[in-house]
Structures are given as C-alpha cells and as structure tokens.
Length: 427
Image (cartoon, helix red, strand yellow):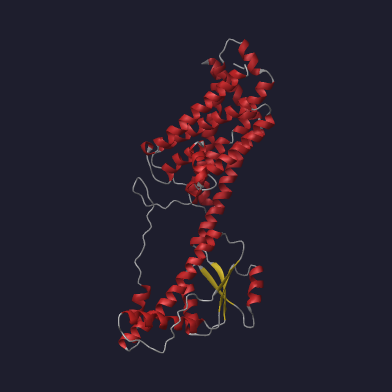
C-alpha cells in the first residue's frame, strides 16, 4: 500500500508539471461544452422561437395572393418583408446577397387566376364523380403546380430548407383548399359558404401532443445542454491520452521501466498508480463540466443541466467511462514510439472515434456501413450509457447493457497494453 501511495504521489507531481496536458484535459473541454452548447441552443431557438426573414415580391394583386401572405404570417416562423415599389426580381436577389433576407418568394401575376381555375376544375371533377352537375364553363385542364419561385440564401442547410419548404407547402395547400371548399359549397348549395363553417373545415385540425419517451414517465423535453454536456464530458475524459500517453512514452525512453525491474516492487503497482491518478482526473473533469452545466449555464442564459434521478448510476457510469479512457491512453502510450506519435495518433483517434461514436453526428444518422464500427467504439457505449440516464430518465439496471460492452472493451485495452509491454521486454 505504501508503494502504491508513493507511486500515485509521483504521478500526481508529474501531472501537475504538464501544464499543456492539464489545459487540454480541463480547459479545452470546458470551452467546447460552452461554445457548442451555445451554438446548438441558438440553432434550436432560431428554429423554434426566432423568425426567418422572408422577402415577398408579389406581382399578383388578387385576393388569393393576399390570402397566401396571411397564411405565411400565421405560420409564425417567417418575418415577412414586402419588396419595395419599383423593385424587380433582380433587385430581390441583390437584397438577398446583402443578407437583407434569407428567403424570398416570387408570386407571379396570374397566381389568383390559376388558383381559382384549379379550384373550379377540381370542383367540376369531384361533382362529376358523384353525378352532380357543376359549372360546365370551367376548363378541363388541371393545373398541377403553381409557378411560385422560392429563393434561398446558400447559408441555409438542407435540413432547414426542408422545414421551410414544408411550411410553405402547408400555406399553399391551405389557400388552395380554402377556395376548393368555397367552390364546392357554392355549387352544391347555390350560396356562399358561411365564414364560420369555412374556418371549421379549413383550419380545424386535431392537436398533436409531443411526448418524449422516458423510462421514468417524466415529460421533460431534453434541451441542448442535456445532449452536449454528457458528450463533451466523454470527449474530455478520452483526451487525457495527450498527457498520459506522453508520460508513458517518456518513461519508456528514459529507462524508468527498466529501472523498475531492478527494484523490489511489481510493475503492476506503477500501472495501477497511473490508472488511479488519471481516473481521478476524469472524475474531476466530469465534476467540473457538470457543475458548469448546473450553475454557470443559467447565468449565460443557456438551459441548465438536470442531473438524472439515479445518482449512483451516474457515478458508476462516470467511473467506468473514466477507466476506459485511461485504458485507451495507456494502450496508446505503450505502442507509441515517440511523444509526437502518442500526441498525434491519440488526438486524431479521439476525434475520429467521437465523430463515429455519436458525439458529433447523431448515431441514428450514421450510414449502415458504420454501424459495426460504431458497436466497437467505446465512446459510443459511453454516450449511450449517459443518454440512458440524462435523456431517457433510466436507472442503473436500464443501462447495464451499455456498461457491459464498455467494460469488455476496457479489459481488451488493458490486455493489449500488458501484451505490448511484455513484447518490448519492459515488464
């Protein structure tokens, strides 16, 4: 026990001298957690709360285009701007280049006429199928699409444009349906449809209640903090490879491992010392990042981190993740020949593992070819275990199937490290 204590104190002193390694392990993950959570929270607010500027160039002066503009305004996600008098389509594009608006729609001059014609044609076809004589003066040609142009600024990503297209199509469909209903009612009843009945038919939709799936039955909607804090805590833990890997390489190069063999001690003590020391570092990292999420984020007007109800499960997951991170760092340090190799390979490997493990890109968005690699990725299982607690409200028993693969991977990494040391005659 005395030998282990002395070795741990030695490793702590070495760690405290490594200022760069400490900054990588403590400061960088904190900055990542703050910056990325802020960015994602701003993105969520832009989608959910803020409005996207939409410039409208209306060549049509009819009632249908006015209805369309009202429908777009009622959607609630657009900040509508009307093009100035005398402007043309080229001027609208220039204003978008100047980022006066991120979106613009061009309503053609015959929009009202086309919508009314299509409504009459659809009414005629519908009444013909039920043997009710309609207005025979309506044309036989059905207009399939409306010639409305939607311009978008290239900074808008595909997923966001899909949401915009869905909202725009909903407004177009609402306006079209309104005039179809008017035509059907007036043709059958030979009078105008009452406004109350028209609103009931066109706007009376069943409400949709969003309920997040959780194991504890709570309906708390996870926020950007709940997603990001666990992810970047894991990233911080595994980034100890910069310090621990370099430390092992230095001790190999200066002959510390050889000298240990001449002393009345076991090398397992030195290996256990490094694991205990850096496991404590990972626990400190987790405590710091969780504390920032709980107390600092609300002061920065970011969502606060809500700790899971199962605190014992949280501690156990953190310990297992930290143990796996130290095992990975030791494995890299054992097989690396120089400090540059340990730092370079370790940093790149962690970024790649984070990318395919769900930390940077959601696991459900991964291509099928990456699924097997993801199952072998320790960061994936770490994240699944944390998400089971933070997002799904699970207990320790619910995440055991995530912890078991993580323990297996950790044991494999330990075995590889011992094999590498024996192969190099260091133990």
